[in-house]
Image (cartoon, rainbow, N blue to C red; front, top):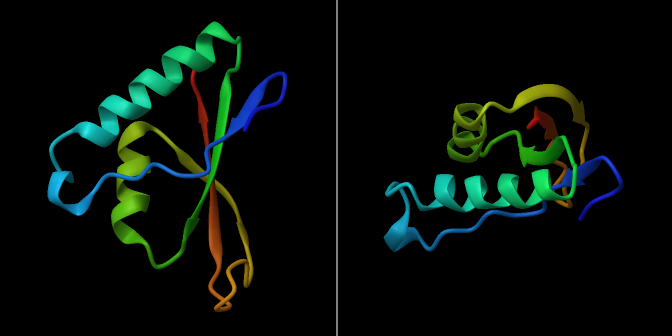
Length: 87
């Protein structure tokens, strides 16, 4: 999902049999290339506070925590809001 200058990344999903092989990073690299073509310079994503694996993955890509949403998910769990500047 995108607006004129930013995009909200809703999901990156890699089947468990293929995780930890660099595919998520490759997929994200392709996404950032496409966003640059559209002159989009900022990407946002929300991650469950308990999803340590996803959080570490996004940190590795350069995302920074900018805020949180209390009780964001249906089970009452908080979300961390992350941002990445790509240009």
